[in-house]
Image (tube, rainbow, N blue to C red; front, side, top):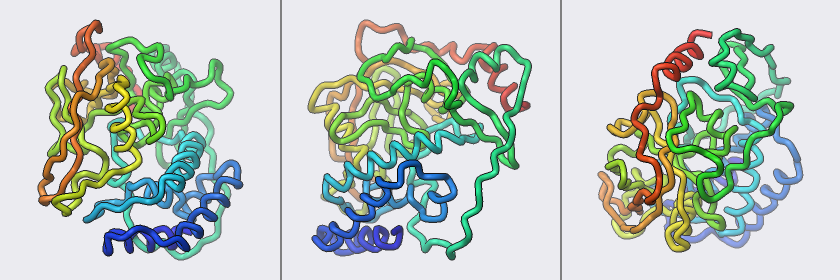
Length: 333
C-alpha cells in the first residue's frame, strides 16, 4: 500500500502533473480497504506505514521540492481515516514531545523495512503516583512505561474527552496551561497529537500550535502572528506554493472569517511562549494571506493572524510556580 502512494507522490513531484485516473482508482481502493478495517492497531500501522501513507495523500510528504496535490475526495477520505487512527494511537506521547512537531519532521519517503511478523503490543501496567497536583492535571490519562514513557487517554474515564472540532473557546479559559499535548486534547483545545494545524479543508482550522518548527518563516508578535502553511520550507518552485490539506483549513478559516484557537508551546523560541508545556492564548482571526519566499527560493503561503478583541490579555505568568513543579514531577515519576 505504502509503495503505491509513495510512487505516485514522487511521480507528481518530479513531473508536476496530476495523478493518473488509474492511480486514483488504485489509491481509492486502498483507502476503502483501510476504512473497512475498523480499528487499526499500532503494530499494523507501523508495519504497513499507514500514517505516512495518509499524510502523503494530504500533502504532508517530507520535504517536497515541488507542489503536488491529490484529488479532494482522496484527501477527505485520508483525513477521516487519519483522525480515527490518531484517536486510537492517542495516544502515546513522550514528555519531550510537548511541542508542535510537524509530521514532516519525523517521517521520510524511504523504502519500507522488510516485512516482519506482527507481534501483539506489549501493554505495561499504569504508573501510580500519590502527588495530588499531578493527579489533577493528568486526570483521564494513563501513564505507563515499557522502556519508553507513554501517555494515553483512558477510554473508561468520565467525562470523556471534549470534542475539539468546535469553533471558538470551546469552554477553555485564556491562560489555561497543560504539561502535555495529550492533556490539551483531552480538554478539547487541540485535535492533533503531532500536527500544528487541527482542522480540514471542509471545516476550516479549529486550532493551531505555535512552536519552533517553522521558526525561519513564522513570526510571533503576541497580538499579531505570521503563521505559514504546513510543508512550507522545502519547496523550490518560485511560483507555486505547496498547499496541503492543513493549509486549506487555514484558507477556509480566512475566507469564512472563522476564529482559530491559538496555543503556544514551550518548544517555541518566541518571547510570548510559555517556558514549559502548552498554553491557550485565546482566539485569533486570519486577516491576510500572502505568498512569500522561503530560504530555498520557493513559494509558500503565510497567514497573518490578529488576536480578537474583548479577551483577557496573554497570561505570561503561566505556567506558574505550581505548574512548573507539576511538569518536573511528571519527568521524575
